[in-house]
Image 1 (cartoon, helix red, strand yellow):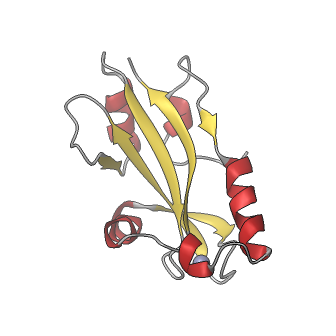
Image 2: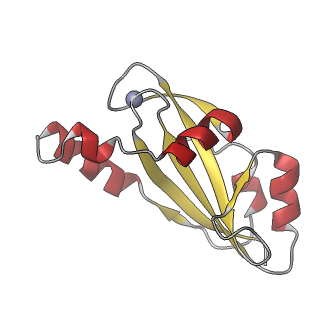
Length: 130
Ligand SMILES: [Zn+2]
C-alpha cells in the first residue's frame, strides 16, 4: 500500500479501516487504455482541485499513470461538523492530529492529482476521530 502522508494513517488508528479505491482506479485506467474513455474524460481536475494540489498537496514519488511525465500530488480533504461545506484541505500533521482528537467524527478523502495533465482520482476515504 502506498504511504499516506500527513499522518492520515496514524490519525485513524483505532477507527474504521477505510475504503480503498485502487481497484476502481485500475478499472478506469484500463478503460482509458482500451479506448473506452477519452483522456479528457479522465483528466478532468477542476480548477480548484488543481489549485489545492499546487498549494496544499503533498508530493509523491508515484508517476502519473496517464501522462507518465509528472509525479502525482496527494490532496487530503476532510469533511465533518464545523468544517467548511466544501471540505478542508489538510496540509499538516498537526492539523490532522487536531481533527483526529475531536469528539465528532470527520471523513477524510485522499485524492491524487497530476498537475500536468489533470488526471485525478479519489484513492482512499477514512473516518477520522469521533
Ligand atoms: Zn499526468
